[in-house]
Image (cartoon, helix red, strand yellow):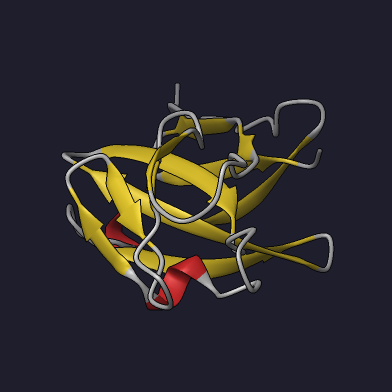
Length: 112
């Protein structure tokens, strides 16, 4: 009997890449249903935020990832990639965080 594995996409999620596409300590922009998001790999755990800082709408994917902190490239606001909460910086608003699901080597993102 063959071991045919059937991968089921979790309801409300969409595949956005493979775990091998992004090394630990790296991040990149991905598109989910026409919206920019930034995917970060911190020590093999994947996190997903809206790819836009609330201060001047800078793209977070062009910033810097330092542990669990993602830094805006424009005015250096820092956000926690796990929650989207502001760590410090010139704004007071958090960045929206999205659920991520990993099955095998496929990364799935919540649609909303």
